[in-house]
Image 1 (cartoon, rainbow, N blue to C red):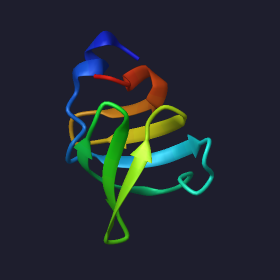
Image 2: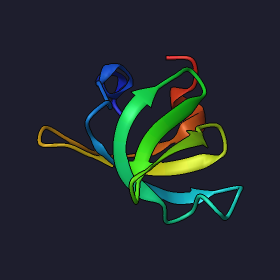
Image 3: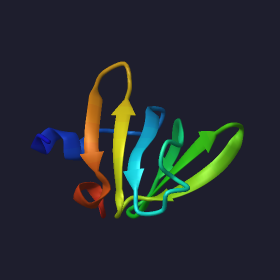
Length: 77
């Protein structure tokens, strides 16, 4: 991941949980509504879901970029 990827705005992007320590999150996808230092808040199947970043791997897509990121690399940003 390039240094510029740490500053990208993820709100409004589509997020898919590729893997997570909590298997209930794996495969979940939706639009990023908010991002905090430790979580993503997404709307998935019409419901707001809060997903911890630390132990997840995420595919994030928007019109401007496509990224695969380890949640631990974007904590506290």
